[in-house]
Image 1: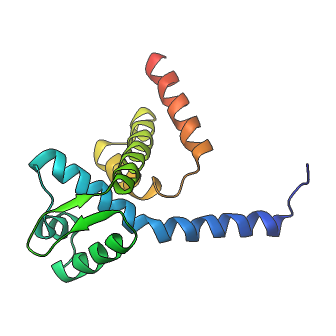
Image 2: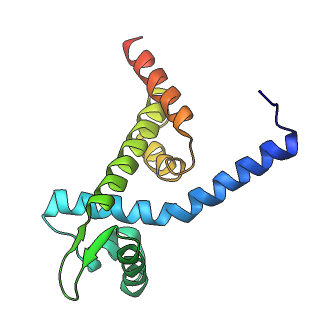
Length: 143
């Protein structure tokens, strides 16, 4: 097994960060679309924009991109639906969010800050880190 140099380790970390930033918006949108469908029976552009704090024009551009990527289906003046791929992304994103949130709560972070911090962290942690968070959360809960 070869040992990476400091520069190589850093390059891997920055590459992973860039990849996470590239997918972060798509994950947030499909997760929210899934939540809106579960809570309200549908996801509309106006609710997406409101929940994300963006204009409808901005939300519309993102939805168009998500359609091209095969994550959502949408028609003008109709609800937005997740494709099978979009549903898988939404579930994975929601699971990562829950793991990070639960870990932060287990170590004493307030509910408000755990919610806010998990929203950003969920996109940037590795599967290894998520697995450790989940294991430690379970350990802390059973104490």
